[in-house]
Length: 154
Image (cartoon, rainbow, N blue to C red; front, side, top):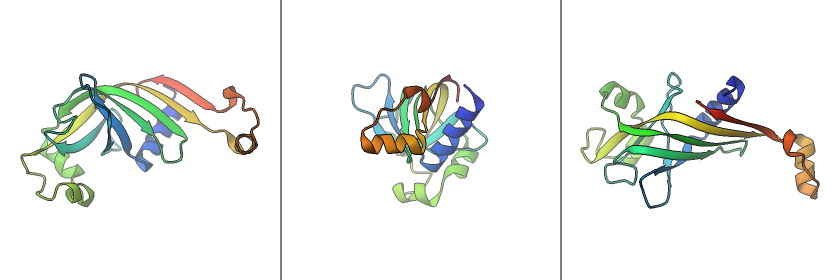
């Protein structure tokens, strides 16, 4: 994946760290999760959830990202594994996480999962001012001028 697309993805994802996650073996729908990002780890993101959550068991999973400005879209595949490093849990345990899990980080009913990303498909969009005008007035937009599409590791 081109480095500028990768950088744009991570910057947009950090600004709007929400992702629809689903285990590949599940029969239900994906659910929204808040990703915990680490600037030093562009191969993984973390989640905290109840053990009985749809993704709580871990395994092969896929997530879909649509950033706040609708300028980056991604489909990310990988494996959810339980994070057992207490230093990682401590680093990601914030007031925001605590608000969802008031019994604290040692509550046995919660699990921290690391999503080890092994594949991604990223789309960036940038229609520009001319494109926005065409969208507003019903004009035709040239798809080759709307952004980029990359497949590979993020």
